[in-house]
Image (cartoon, rainbow, N blue to C red; front, side, top):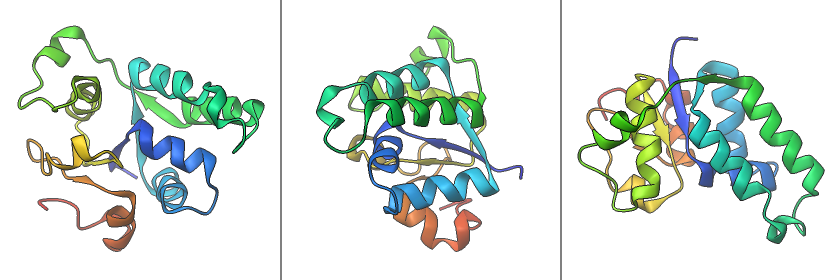
Length: 148
């Protein structure tokens, strides 16, 4: 289990809100076969987004908070400094997403899973594949993601 995987907030939110969805299945695959990588910034964003009341109709707030706690427990935390964020080159067209690119570098990630077009258009970014949850699942459980 040496593969390191970064999963962006959009994918994690979909996984939390829709059990049996492709993002949920991709997250389960990551947890079973890889190291889930996070930073304090990415975890804070996940918590902030899932705390939004607009999601109450999909999943109880208590369950959403338990999901965030699970992700915190299962993640390998990597320090991402301001200088790491400033060094992201080329940057994402959405500056808020640079935190995932900086994390991928800091963690020496093998892949970044995203449902966000702003990140997906960068594939591959500095040699790191950026793939959708469906692509991650379809590529022999991600084993052939190197060099794509």
